[in-house]
Image 1 (spheres, one colour):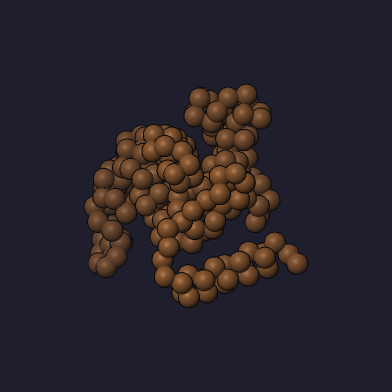
Image 2 (cartoon, helix red, strand yellow):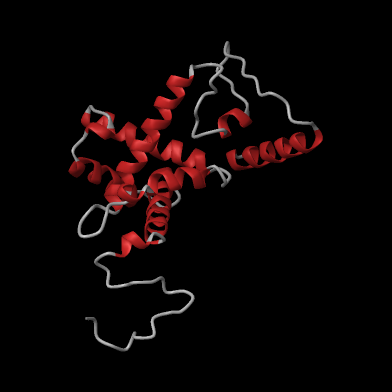
Length: 194
């Protein structure tokens, strides 16, 4: 049986279990390495506060946000316009991730891949590397084979960072646009740029 089949069956069983039973407090057996699907889904692989204190969970969440901010800034660096992190794109993506199935897992595994590449190839955490080296690692993710973790992560990050960034009117500085294209369009499209 393939991995995708197992995951699909697990999701179906979990869905049935959630509908059949009233909500219960989630518990984790800390003596084993197994955690429930619900605990895993609660936040980018964060371990519940019952196992680690709130400080460790907050520190882990902060590192995830900093990693995502670094990736977002590689995609949209500061120039005449603000960078992606200047507009809190990374926080918006993290908030969005809580509402989309498997998105927290993609973020967790994709950021983990970046961290693994940084430590394996350069002997330092991703956030401690110069921006040029970080950019080479992210470029390697974009160059990976289609449908592999690094490529799926990089493509999704690019799409989500750009979409989230350009939803904010502050990002339009230097573009020549003063409003979104919808719903009014650009009635002066035939005129040369000013």
